[in-house]
Image (cartoon, rainbow, N blue to C red; front, side, top):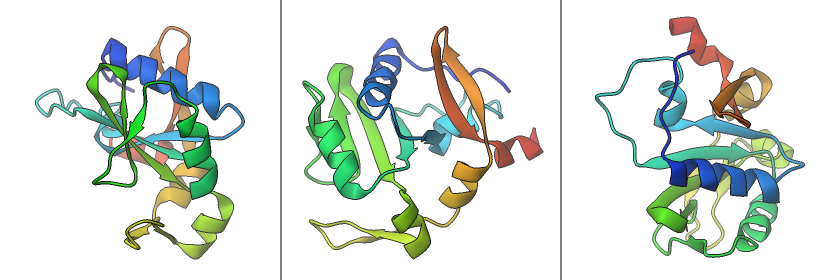
Length: 144
């Protein structure tokens, strides 16, 4: 795996999510996950995408405990963390994965969870920085 470069603020955001969701599996997805396997330094990503093995309600309740974090009023999955970090949290508990989608409670928008079952079943540990690990979908490594 290649190192993905996260800012100090992004690392702090990951640590905060890991603390409030300590009993849940968390998987890095999106462009940052791709950056673990592919040299995409040319593409700057300014947000983090995480999927958590929890219900929508569990995720919202846990994230609401984070001081100075605010939900983005435009996107139900997005939270704004200290330091200007945008972090998209996709709940993917067993019931949601079985349904294959999320129906977001405020907007009624549907989001497919196709592929997240594989991400939770086939992932590997990736050290973001000393002492901070995340799970990254393993199927991405087949292209490295």
